[in-house]
Amino acid sequence: MRLLVAVLLVLTIACTNVMNLLLARAAGRQREFAIRVALGANRRRVVRQLLTEALLLGAIGGVLGVVLGAAIIPALLRSSPVEIPYWISLQPDWRVIGFTTLVVVGASVFFGLAPALHATRVDLTSAVKQVGAGGAARPASRIRQGLVVAQLALSVVLLVGAGLMVRSLANLAKVDLGFRSDDVLTFQVALPNTRYAESSDRIQFFRRLMQELQARPQVRAAGATAGLPLGDNWWRTFLREGETRTKLADLTPVRYVPVTGAYFAAMGIPVISGRAFTDTEGAASAPIIVSRNTAARFWPGQDAIGRRVMIDSFIPGQPWRTIVGVVGDVRSGSPREEAPLTVYVPHASEALSAMTVAIRGRTAMPALITDARAVVRRLDRELPLAAVRPMRVVVERANWDFRLYTQLFVLFAAIAILLAAVGLGGIMTHLVTERTREIGVRVALGAAPRQVLVMVLGSAATLVAVGLGIGIVGALVLTRSLSSLLFGVAPEDATTMASVLAVLTAVALLASWLPARNAARVSPIDALRTE
Image (cartoon, rainbow, N blue to C red):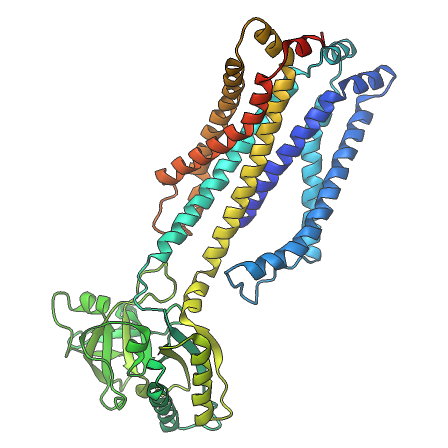
């Protein structure tokens, strides 16, 4: 929905540019319309002609947009560092074509109607006088100035949104996830029940796999887990020894992660106190490791080592587990979420058939992948490896939606700035043309080129100031809808607002510089010769 609003803002900015062009074209055709009216043409016929022209322009633009979109979008996706999930299709289909057709027709009629109605308000005498004088109607100029102000205001909204998203992405990159993703390869192994029906078979396979991987010279550490960070989570309830709560609703949910002994070393998760699991620990000894925030939550200011807890105490027969270690907090579902309360148990206590293996290597990823495949093939030739990817890619994919939103917002903001600059440059050129005689008279009476330059830039600065002022107010209101996406930055962030104002002011004045320079070079003889 937010992206749709951004697209509509860009569409509105583009349409105001087209509306500006239609107004300028209509101003140049006032004499034609006056003659048509004098010869008996009614207003409805002239409006129909102008709307047909607007629809033709819109149809050409719509067809070109669909063709370019179908050609450019795949190229952009291939060059983007963000990997789009397979279930999201960005190829245009009949629904996209239909929606585009409705938007093109609606925008063409809406933004073409005002110039058409304005152009048909023709008075024959005044129209001929204005054309003879070389000027355009002042009301049309005021409308065009208002459209430029609207373009600038909408550009502010888009640029503020893009700035907030970029700052949020930068803040996310600085977040301590609780593990080190560098030089870590991950892949999934799923044991078929037909050949690994017994718990002991599954336990033995993963123990041998970890031992074989750990023995490789290019492997620093190898571990396996049922819940890779930033992936799927298991949740269980948590009861401390001595507590009397028995209702399920009263129990505290914690993230439950079966792991092998060297998992913490492989993922770079620090062991703060106590120890990690050994390869021989399982359901009989029932050890448990908790995260630092879990220890602080349930035993504030105390040592959690040696405490006993029960997982899923509402199920009869659950054993009391002794805490043997405390490890660092790890962010789980998303980097934007705080690290959940987490407990780790040995894989042997669950004997799962599907695990994700993490290998911290000493060599490049391709060589590490080849080595991992060889080890698994030696243990079970028919066993495939799934989801083989570096942990760095896992981290990037955890933010794929946010990265994509940020890239699109930046793209939309860049388009908006370009369109606003073109619109402002066009209106300033038009205003200079309107005031050519006035400027010629000023120069003839002794005005210096610098004074003319300042006068024209002052007119542009007025439009810019009004547009930016309205835009900031709009941004303060509309960017609140981005609150759920932002991270570490407020929707009304002053630094972002100030940066946007500075960038847009510089771009707007730069776009006005060429018309202002041309105005300063006006020759009074050439200007007055048109009288």
